[in-house]
Structure formats: structure tokens, C-alpha cells
Image (cartoon, rainbow, N blue to C red; front, top):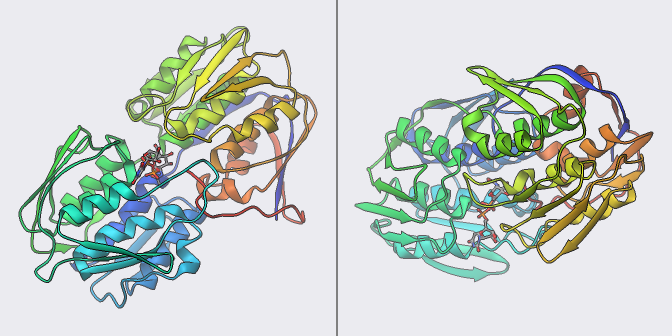
Length: 434
Ligand code: UD1
């Protein structure tokens, strides 16, 4: 198990380039299973464990998958099974997103239920309700969700999502592309990654309208072909670097970041005192003249402030001026980074779903554990700020969602390195949020 070692206190300066969005790549790789002819070419795939797991999952179902650098070529003409191996599915919750394509294309899917999760309950009931509304039958057998489409295939339906679940919207949208007639998803998730998925599906020949709004309409077609698609930049990676630069930067350019996708984050950092300018190729950020001002932040579904940038903001505000509050409304157990930040000297209390942060003038380096992907990013930010040395264990969580975070921060001038020899405590990969 590797660990990351940071000597804090160095200001960040220069340019960092943002890669393709993990949360767009995963459903797009899964969607490539829908093509009964042609080869898909997916470009700007980040070098992440989660992307590797999804490519292995797609290959395990019979697709030919070849990755060269940041491009993957996928031919899914011959699928051989509708049951991805448990060994792969248990490693990543998002694997469940192959259910929709398999059901549409293969007529069935058998996916091990996503395992225990460390950021709270993460059910898949809305995915299954959606499939059932289109005529599928589901059962739970030996820890596996088994789904079967009727003989003639799925039929379009009007589906209202109780919450605008990102994954359920993706799964239903993909299943609907090959269903008979029209499917309408109401209260759909509006995240940019879902718009990117819809764009890829439409390039494959699907008829998806309204992605990015509350209502998505999908007119089923009889078949889809492979298509070439360039994945959107990762707004969470961009936001993580912006937050780091707001607190420890000295003029950082976040290249390939799309400001339209992180307006809520930019607004909050400006409110705290950072100066931000965007242009067509990225976002430039200068720190505040003094310590960042306190903020009240509430996570919610897009376009509100994203839950995947909550932990990083808590770390940043822990050295802000005054009392901040950060309220998490999307997941019920997503404050595990708080205990670790406290070990570094942060003054944070958690009441229900709200973290109350009394800004301190400095943090001090400590040994800390990443409990999930974004908590790990928060500890990296805290380590950059802290006085002295911080050692972060369980960094495999970071490898799931940050492509070369250590190298990128080194290039910005941080004193950060990775030690591969560490016999640290291995955490579970299962179900960690992204
Ligand atoms: C996706 C993202 C994740 C992000 C999350 C919220 C990927 C791979 N992951 O996860 O990084 O943190 O969106 O922005 O894209 N829910 C139900 N029933 C369901 C499904 C979800 O009740 O069937 C609830 C969940 O418990 C949660 C909320 O809906 O409270 C949002 O979850 P959802 O949007 O589905 O998150 P994911 O797609 O798992």
C-alpha cells in the first residue's frame, strides 16, 4: 500500500491540465456495449483505477477493448454473457451502470449488488423501478440483481425519479435507447456527465433529447453503432485544484477546466475572496489577499454545489477566517474526513448533516487515513496547507479518481511524493463514492 508524503507550506504556481471526467467515462464505456456494429473510439480517458475496472468489465462481457494511451477502442458486436464477474463489480459501485445496456442489448443482466459503502446508503432501487416500468422483471438471487426483459424487448415508459439520481438516470436512458416507443424520465439528473453520455448515445444513433434538463425524452431505435467521442473535462478534478489554489496558490491556471460546469464552486471561492478569471481554455485563480473568508455551503444536485467537492471545501475552510458551515444533503455519511482533519488541528464539529468549522490560523502535519476518494483529496489539500509533514495512508482511494495528483501538484511546486513501499492499512475498494 502506498502512502503520500507532503511537506506543507509551499505556494502553488503555474499550470495544471485537467483530464477527462471519470464520471462521464464510466457510463460512456458501459454505453459502448449498446453498439451491435462498428467500433467506438472514446478519447481523453484518464489513467484511473475506476476507468480500468470499467474497461475490464466491458471486456468480461465479450467486447473487444483496446486502450492506447488516453484512447479506448471498443467493439461490442459479440457479447457472450450478461453477468460481469463479481471480482470486478465488487471493486466499483458504478459497475451497476452496465445493467441498462445489457438489458437493452442482451435482454438480461445479472449484477452483484454493490457492496457496503463508506459514505452512506447507496441503493439502486430507482434503477430497478425504471427497468421494471419498461417491462423488465427483477429478482434478487444470491446477492445478485437479476433482470430480464420481456421476449419482444423493453417498452418505453414514463418514469418519475423520486430523487434525481445520476446513476439511475444513466441506466434508464441507456436501456431506453433500444426500447419500443418513447421513454420519458422526469426529475432526471442534470449533471454535465449525463449530457455527455446523451451526446455519445446520439452519435451512436440514439434519439435522446432534453439531457441537462429535468425531463429527458428517448425515442427507441432498433440498433446503435459504435461512435467516436471525446469525453468532457473532469469538473471535480478541476474544482479540487481550484480549491487547493484558492488556499495555497499564488496564481494557478487550471487548463481544460470548463467554468460552466462549476459555476457554484467559482461563486463560493469568489465569495471567500479568491480572484477568478475564465477564458476559453481554462480558469485562472489568484488567492485572496488575506485568509479566505468564512462561507456557508450546501451540497445538492447539479447545478448546486457538488457533494464530490464537499470534503475539499471543508479542508479549505478549516483555515478560513471565522465560522463556516458546510451542509451535506446528498449522502448521509460523508464527513469521515472531519476526524482526520481534526487530527491536523482543524476545529470542526458535526451536527447532523452540517459541519461547523471554526477557522484556525494553521494546521499541523500528521499521519492521516483517506477514507474515500474525495476525503483523500481533502487530506491532500490540508497537507499542502499544514505546517510540517503529513503522511496520507490508503491512497488507493485517490487512484480511483485522480490521475497523477502527485505529479500534477509537484509541477505546481508542492513538496509532495509517493512512497510505494509503505505497508499501510488496506481499505476496501468497495462502493467508495466518487
Ligand atoms: C454519482 C457519482 C458520484 C456523486 C453522486 C452524486 C458516478 C460514477 N458517481 O453517484 O461521484 O457523488 O453521483 O452527485 O457518476 N439514490 C436512491 N436510490 C437509487 C439511487 C440513488 O435513493 O436507486 C439516492 C442515493 O442514496 C443518494 C442520491 O440518490 O442519496 C444520489 O445518488 P446518485 O445520484 O444515484 O449517485 P451515484 O450515481 O451513485
